[in-house]
Image (cartoon, rainbow, N blue to C red; front, side, top):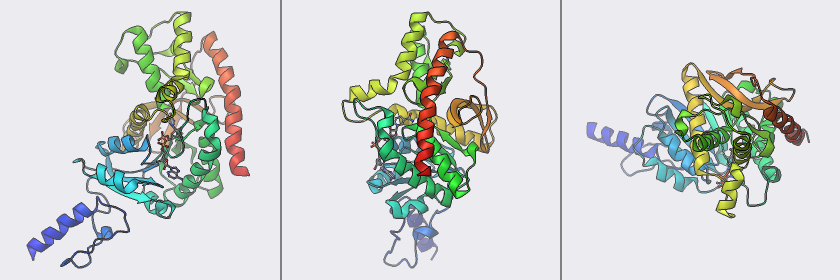
Amino acid sequence: MQASADVNRRIARITAHLNPRTNNLKMEGSSNLRLENCRAKGGSPGFKVAILGAAGGIGQPLAMLMKMNPLVSVLHLYDVVNTPGVTADISHMDTGAVVRGFLGQQQLEDALTGMDLVIIPAGVPRKPGMTRDDLFNINAGIVRTLCEGISKCCPKAIVNLISNPVNSTVPIAAEVFKKAGTYDPRRLLGVTMLDVVRANTFVAEVLGLDPRDIDVPVVGGHAGVTILPLLSQVKPPCSFTQQETEYLTSRIQNGGTEVVEAKAGAGSATLSMAYAAVKFADACLRALRGDAGVIECAFVSSQVTELPFFASRVRLGRNGVEEIYPLGPLNEYERVGLEKAKKELAGSIEKGVSFVGK
Ligand SMILES: NC(=O)c1ccc[n+]([C@@H]2O[C@H](COP(=O)([O-])OP(=O)(O)OC[C@H]3O[C@@H](n4cnc5c(N)ncnc54)[C@H](O)[C@@H]3O)[C@@H](O)[C@H]2O)c1
């Protein structure tokens, strides 16, 4: 009797890693062993995280890295294609998080229910010659649908939005949440971490330092001239010649295009993006846990400028964004850059807002 109970428990534990969720185990000799009876609440203490678009170029390495994160107890992988394979593969990693896969719109609500953090890299990426804005027509609708699901199933979750154009998809998400009456601006964050990761790397190359020792604030938004690295505020304090400033600013602003062109039609940044997304998600989870002093750049609802959304340094806490820092003193080059960034951002934000209003 005891032996059979042990076997059932072991099967239950293994089953919890398998998908799809509706595929309840029916085994000879075992009575009503259902996935719902398995480790449905997660085996280890930690947070429940969903990745929407988990089978994509970003989604897959992001899922792998989140499975390695000790703060995650349950990892839900949702996509409209290929999640069973990705889930089976990742679920074999001997780390604490329980992984479950969800396939297609009819499983979106199951994927989202009870989540603490939702990361969204769903949508199409750029091909050479395209701007992020060219993705708007497809990705706007995808983000709207996914955010409607979030409003319904996990309205208190922190949302990390990666799908481009971030400058428009974040306003879209905000409008969807407002319509549903669940909008909490502190919980909606556009992920601009890759711009910071690139800035740290490129600045370190110029200075001959370790990128892990560099911290470059990048403000504004996440597309072309809206990406504004504040090179006058790099830590540790350093100075650049005008030529270095122009080279670095341009390389940081065009880092995404550098990858799109090198991949020659096979997509945009995925591996460095997954790394950046995990760095950002980990910061959100540490803040949710109650860690103090978690400060990152993100594109959020903001009063730092006259625009309703803006990327700048924010302090994260149990409720998401708890403090938004002002831009600090800018030099003349940055002031000019800020005006250009604001002009373009205003149009992208408006485009997102009016998409939902239609
Ligand atoms: N914020 C950033 O810094 C940043 C950086 C790089 C890429 N991106 C953006 O991230 C997005 C994803 O890029 P990628 O390279 O992973 O693309 P990809 O095409 O490789 O993957 C996208 C995934 O989304 C899935 N998907 C499509 N419609 C969906 C829906 N309705 N619900 C759930 N999933 C859906 C696809 O099936 C696919 O698996 C793109 O919009 C890209 O521009 C953002």
